[in-house]
Length: 420
Image 1 (cartoon, rainbow, N blue to C red):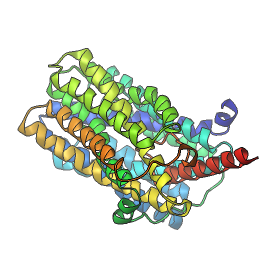
Image 2 (image 1 turned 90 degrees about the vertical axis):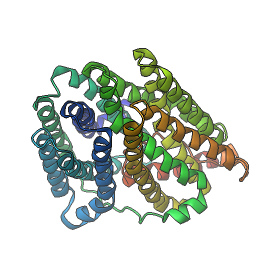
Image 3 (image 1 turned 60 degrees about the horizontal axis):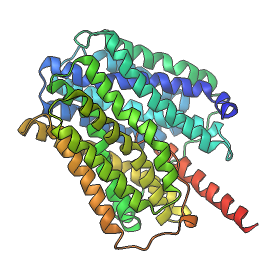
Image 4 (image 1 turned 180 degrees about the horizontal axis):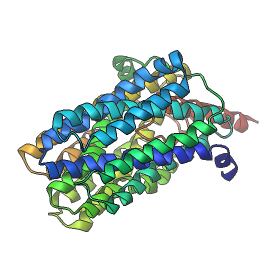
């Protein structure tokens, strides 16, 4: 693993720095929004704006790269994102934040496409699985570390926003200075949602609902903490727990994924998520029950994403996987846009604890649909399934396609080894 990382350390360092800046700004939106008196609904629209931009960037950035090249697109997106972060404390109006968040989301998605293209080009068939795993760990550590940086300043000033902008700006240096080769970006046309649902109903429905869960957790978690009276340090810890749980639970869920019916594991993980949300809902403001609820509810979200990708790949032919990857990313994005809007409305109409209610109901819907699908399709034998690989919900179609290709190649290698 050390030898693999040594070849891509500069790229991984750049990703960590980007995630430090991006992770800070996600939580800052909730903190500063509370200070400015924004309502739950207004902050929900702001949150959805980011995922609208992110979804658009995943579709348009490959076309931009093909026209003007990686370096120019990467540098331009980085400049716009850095400017957007600095502008947030200068234009503290919901409509302005929504526009800026669309811009930041678009830039962040494009940055992922470019960085993941370089990372994929730097890997070989033998090392791709380890490189992608290291990449996902770097992203998660960056988000968790960002919450610690938030305790060093006051969200009521511009200092933390400027710090996030600086981190994003300097993150491009190690990536651009190390990325010697310029890989081609070929992202398959996304599979239509109707065809995706026909090929894997659980994959399509599950990914859509999980998009709602992930966007609500990452975008509305700080809003929830602010509205129930948490301190800035407690909010930072709360958001960190959402992602720390994913770091801890990813391996055991992945290990089980390669050894049992994945629909049962989807059901079990979603039930754990729903139970955790129930604890958060009835905690009554108790700090550590809320932290435990965040750890397990956030902990199953990222593994569920990778699990649903793997299950969908099992149901499709190798030729359909690239298009299915794009379709799943698009479906996830649509869910991510809708989730915060529903949650913000519920928090506005009921109370802040509706944050947990909406998450719990969504997890419950995933569990029930997985249970239903078990009665509709025979179980795929474990030895005929593709390998599980840690893929984060924020990954672009480039990383999702690369993970799918790696899983197919790995499965074929294992089958040949078994025959001999």
